Image 1: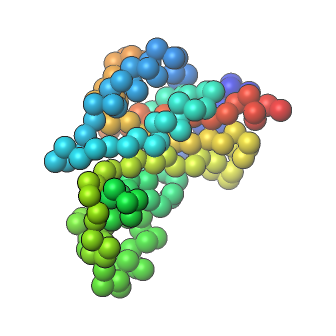
Image 2: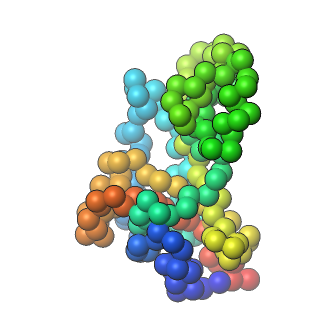
Image 3: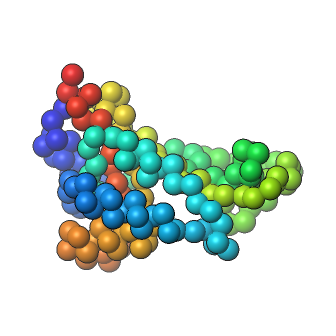
Length: 184
């Protein structure tokens, strides 16, 4: 699959407003900015999603409106203790019925839960994971290994300034893929 076809198909997705290739310098700026991001209360953030994006050969900025259908990937925001135990995570609509009936689950909000067991060991950190992206109808080839990740508000500001994009109600996602592998 060629880059121009990826861009064309992304622009045909509902809610995708604009797609721009991200150069190495912009990616370095985002990596630097994200290294300063902390979760509420100063909790460490392990940005798995950004690392995965930087491990792909092609990174695109995808500006999306609220009508964009984010892949229902489950836990993209995970709270993990020093022993690697999952102590909390974001919740998708599909997870609510199962989690609502569990006595060890505490809903901190409509979209985030914590577990009462096990008790966290040591320090707790937030892990930010990407979402696999296949496109509506699965048009993205599996060998592209495409992932979608949304930057922090400060990084979003850097991206929007770089592309001179007014934000309004738009989000700036990073879609990364292995385009050279997808061509083989």
